[in-house]
Image (cartoon, rainbow, N blue to C red; front, side):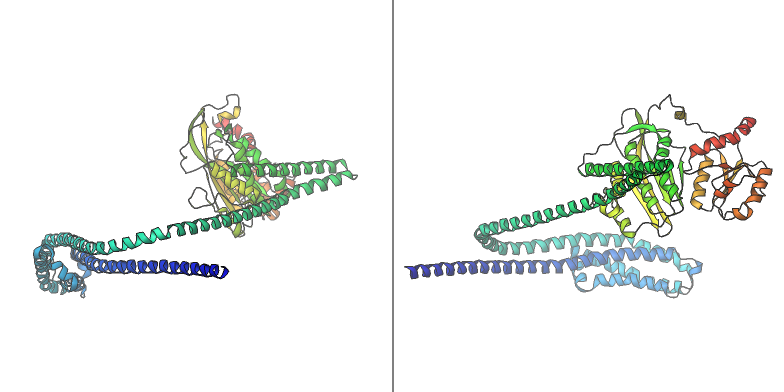
Length: 607
């Protein structure tokens, strides 16, 4: 029994292999049959299509070349002579198109169209064109009297050419259609036999294919789940490492300062250390808030809450947050807000603050020395279509432009920042571990607010970011706020100021600030003092020439009663002549009272 059982087992396996071999045989035969059918069908269609397309192509080339030859003759002028065979060259090109239509398979095909009508037309066209050779030879020899007759004869055969093109197009379509019907009829008989074979094969292989497909899908889903779990674990580890790195610095600063406070220090040192603890605590709180906002954005749960606030006052408050950091690095910061923007706007100022803070923090990080400028100005972009909030009249777009004179950003960081989530096939945004926490949040917030972020960087020349953000104009501004009127002091006409500043970009922003007070600006980019020229105001900034010529220049300006506003350290230390000091960040709010105090009497005088 055991031997019999073994024999039956072997027999069943043998039958199974025979069945598998039969199935494989059927598959091979079926593939061979369909391959031969497909090859025959494709080859026949290819040959027919090649002749068909060649006839159409050469016909259209005849028409196009006739137009080119006619345009060539019309465009001839006296400067083109002698023609040196150019006319015969164009003529030969035209005749070559006729020859292609009369020879080979294309010629044989065309002769069957429209009962030979196409052949007669082609002979007429050929005869007319051959008669042109005499006039053309005269034209080549410089006899332009034959040119009008030559043009007229070409124009007369345009109707025949157009009719010929129409007939060839019609005949070619009918020919290829008939060929296709003939081929299709022959293929139908073969495909009926093949379909019967295919049905048997499908019925036999249905359950096998279904089982193999399910097994393959299960394996694939298992691999995807394993990769997903691994990716989640890697992201979790990277995020924890990044969070640890971000919060370690402020915590260490707090602990180190607290340890110092436990020692005996003076009262002044305690005040400094207490302020340092406060800054570190705020930095830690800001980091935690950024992480929270990033999580809400990724979960698509962060909502925008627009409020109506004073634009200039809010932006100046954001810039003032970084005044201690910029002072420690001796960075010169300046802010300019375009007067064309409304004083009060409706916007999510909490998110705008995060964007500006992120851009400023990045600029301070990559700028060891120099200047940082921040401009808020109208954007040239149109506002996106969105529902207007309550108590607003229209939507516009403002642009936040921040520029520094630092080292520039690494190429890898720039590449990670060039992700645009509004474009198809793009990622949602850069990872914080790639670009930093602040820039990652800034990038996500800009596109969440339906804005755009762009930047340019050059090594050792700094970076410039410009962010376009839509905002709304409120129906009514707060009436109890004196700044809601938006009135700024205006100097008398033709008031001129000399700005002495070797930092070109810093000087440009200062000139924009002065222009808001109706002051024309003369820039001294090389730092020359120009003390012998007459100006209504001098703003003395960074210049290497002050140490040599500064005392004489102050004396000259004092003699001419020209006021001097300065942030140059050596000028401020000069006690012989009065210099009006001004500090960074340099804003319009700081300049306005100084300008008004200097020119208010002149303004009343001209009134």
